[in-house]
Amino acid sequence: MIAELTLPRLGETMETGRVSAWLKQPGESFKRGETLVEIESDKTVVEMPALADGVLFEIVVEAGQDADVGAVLCRYEDGRAVAAVVAPEAKPAPVREPVPAQPTATPEASGKAASSEGTRATPLARRVARDGNIPLAGLIGTGRRGRIEAADVRRSLGQAPTAETPAARISSLEVSGGRLDRRDWATANASGPRIVLLHGLAADVQSWSALASMLMRAGRRVTAIDLPGHGTTSLEATSIDHAAEVVANFLKTLGDEPVELVGHSLGGAIAARAARSASAQVRRLTLLAPVGLDRAIDVDFIQGIVRVRSSGALQHLLRRLVVRPALLTAAQLDALARELGRGRLAGLADTLVDDSGQQIDITADLRALAMPVRIVWGVQDRIIPWTQVSHAGSRCAIHLIQDSGHVPHWDQPAEVAALF
Image (cartoon, rainbow, N blue to C red):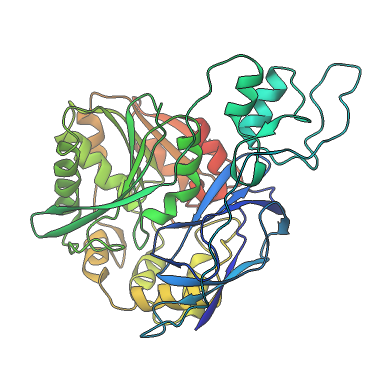
């Protein structure tokens, strides 16, 4: 079955985006989670991962071209829909030699850097050029298809360039009871504690792609794991305490490396309990709209999302999560509905809520923590009221984000990334 990949809205004000580079070419196969394309918005460059195994069939928007939000970027053969794929003959990718960037307008007499219109450059390169009063026109871009990287600008300033940012790496870890899957984003010169991300109910590591890509490009090491019962992790979900134990044991595999632990919604409660077990290793805890602070919650959403049977019902539920719903293709919605329809998470949801509200409480966990704790919440959250932050305790720093729903790292990824 031929499916389509469309351009999602990567920020509240985003209306168009530019395709920076295709990491796969027509005829090439890919695995779920592999990066297919880099999208440049006015604030950052974001990697878009594949949501399923497949074969790239056709590129609709070429590298260097702009597209409107919702536009089709490419078409691919969905590997989940066929037993075997006969791909078009793969053409070898041409060797991409560094080429001069397309010239832009001459800098104004004021000394400001040249306009970036028509010049292919990363957002970081533009910022370095602006700060250094260096026009992008005439610089040699060493990135894909001649894109100007920050390293190219720094060379013109006589500064040491930073290493090229690699794509995220997917790996697995064998643990007691099954396999734990992870995804890592890192640059060669990354600094600061590793940021470990725990997703919410019915999500997976790919839900962090926009935020993780921003943090990586800011020089941070980032790791996300598929929690038990989620994504491609083979461990089944039994309870929040079990998931917290799995996370604490995972942190031990990092040795003595300090981490910043980040959890969203269900992942927030798991992060709080895991931090209590690994208090010597966790330097800071960040919770995004966590469960466990009060009883109020959209029970219908929780019970519905883990038992959804159709893409239409799923789409209605997803609208409650964010201010600007993510644009998913019909094929993507069908695939997600099929996965959730297996009922793999129904038991976990039953331990999370009953008909009257939340059944867990993390306030005691937060009081027992010695490391800095902060809570981030979208004020338009329709799943859990943001006012529950009043139960977190006076030691917790509170960050409220406007124009954001229950998933602030989808609605406002740049604002969340700025906190780090």
